[in-house]
Amino acid sequence: MRLAVIALFLTLLTAFPTAAREGAVGTVTRLQGSASTAQGAIGPGSPLAAGTVLTTGAGARAELRFVDGTTVVIGERSRFAVESFAYDAPSQSGQAHFRVDQGVFLVNSGAVAKLPGRPLSVATPVASIGVRGTKFWGGSLNNPLDVLLLEGAITVRSPGGSADLDNPLDGTDVPAPGAAPSPVGRWKPERVEKALQSVSFD
Image (cartoon, rainbow, N blue to C red; front, side, top):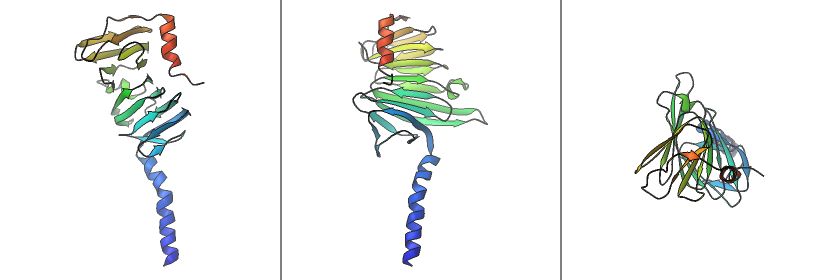
């Protein structure tokens, strides 16, 4: 009887990581410094499920890769949430909604952003970013939200209005909660460098 109980315990113990990974929609592929979720510290190879909220420490960088090929890099002292994520390649269906409560981020979209309706978005406390198959940076440099387009096209929407970014190295800012995004304009090289350094690994 005792041996049966031990065998059952070992079976359940080894099944937990598998079960966690079965519900995974992404993976931590690279980590500099510390990062954690509600379950504790994470590292390269840690699975990410829909609903996961990830926070990073001082000087940290975390690279996340999702099942559709989307990659996200989170900078230091950031809080990033996978609000929802689903992708089915055979039926060409899915959606992805991320939320960044604080900090900086770099998104390089994958297959979900190419689906009809472009169902990939990133929400922040002051605006949301609709993605149309692209690569972009977001965070706070001099405003509650600054957004820089690197490839493709995005739309930044706030309660005060919206801005469409279609040309690489164009950016917009949301100067205050409820305010409209600023007119789109090309960022100076030093501002671009500062943004990219915030998500660069040492």
